Image 1 (tube, rainbow, N blue to C red):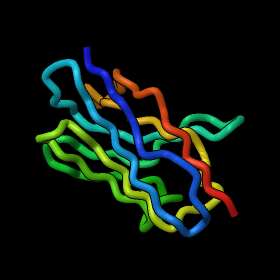
Image 2 (cartoon, helix red, strand yellow):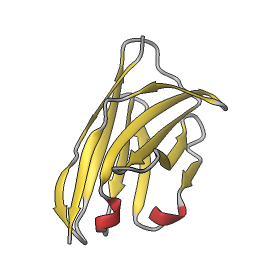
Image 3 (cartoon, rainbow, N blue to C red):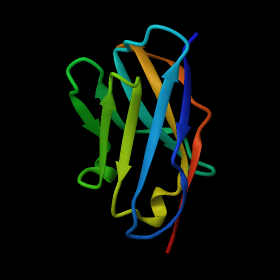
Image 4 (cartoon, helix red, strand yellow):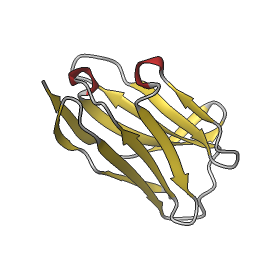
Length: 118
């Protein structure tokens, strides 16, 4: 059973940076892709960024393009989300997820809180 553990969240001022990490454990890990999602209070969970595990093809939501960078280290079974120029509207719980097929995110982390103060 794959387990995902996020870390790196916290409180930061607007304009600051944070790097989130998501480490996978519990078995052979070679997902179709890894994604970062976020959920703000009262809102739906939305995808922020995704990276194909083998090809490293990346996708970003429009709201974070040019500010966030997703990357992965296959030797550590870890995916990262570098977040720069943070805005108060980036405040949310951030989740990583493993996409095992093109249509299924099967494994989810517990989430890490990111709070951006103005």
